[in-house]
Length: 152
Image (tube, rainbow, N blue to C red; front, side):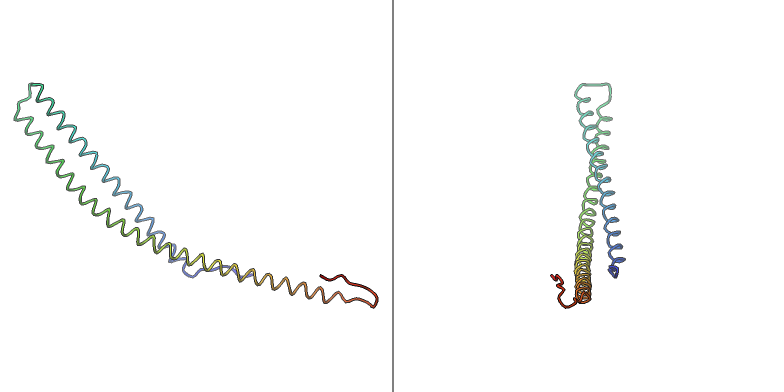
């Protein structure tokens, strides 16, 4: 009995590995983006806290509060610029993923088509062998005169 063999299995495995690597890269970028969103949120909360603290007339000098607020706002702007760069990187990685996924899908479809063809040929061979076996056994069951042989 023949074994199924797909010559492009190694290429398919490599493409699947590349797709997993791109997915990992996407996940890492997602973690970085989430971290930056967290920094921005914390910065905004700190600015809000300083603003309300200034309104409550605390013992902190106004110029100190202003300096802290400017530092935090600069950090927020820096984080937003970093976020824009990461968003661009994420778009590029998503394009790479789409390309890699298309290559994997094409090879998987080709493999499935080849498997179906192999299975169809194997079934035909099995059917042919069965027919030969039936015909051989039917022909071997010769009858004596006067004896009836039931044949299908």
